[in-house]
Length: 333
Image 1: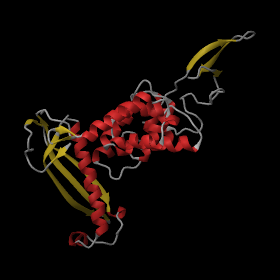
Image 2: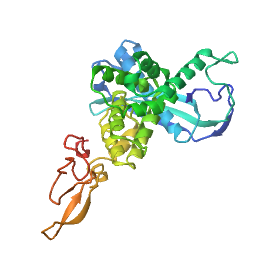
Image 3: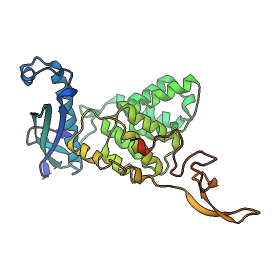
Image 4: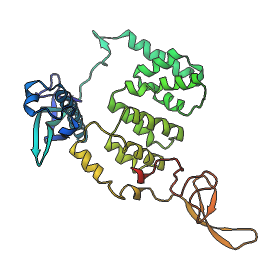
């Protein structure tokens, strides 16, 4: 998304203006490396750590502004400005950065792909797409590809490989060759734009054909790259049990900086709010033995029937909410 301090964008025409938006983030001085440095030091250029931390804060608030703009389905933010303020009082010192801009919808323009050079499509792009097509057509498993192919897929940034990658997530192998090659393949998401990686990974978590193997690898990818998106989290909480379990992992991740909107959202899950979303998923029914009267049992998701007072399934060991003994539960968030 384009973010600019100007009120026009070269080569594009504004079709619609939305109301101005803002994003704010705050950091306490105790989170900075140089606790003893003064605010004068910062503006005097003598405190490099302050500069670095505030630069990170700046990037975070710009990203938050972009997220706000996307909720309007805007294409760009114009009239962008940033203010940095110090908040002091009652023995505390904090820095607040506020970004302001106007989201706009731009007229669609027909254009040649970004890979076009001098009016002609870059030959390397065509070569890579042809190579990708052949790899996808001939793919039979991780074991059948070489390391160079795995590296090509990982660094290609070609979305054609997404179905192949989700297929590869369901494959199993225990030797080091398989483990290393699979790890190389799934570096693919590290090379994507953050928003694109979030859309793909969270989208699969909401898919009806999500498998447990995919769930584990996707959660690991989200955690390792810190792909936190609370808008996507809200969608997951309305999804399947696996999708909601993914939320528990996301909510344990720490963002570099939290916007006011982030904090407000997280506050909604304080107390038992999150726990109440994970209800029992078993079916209580009557079971009649050969020589006994009817008695109530609960049927696990795996199909096994258990005594009504049993806390976990005697077959798959999951509890009545569908959690295994070692799985992360909402009470721990």
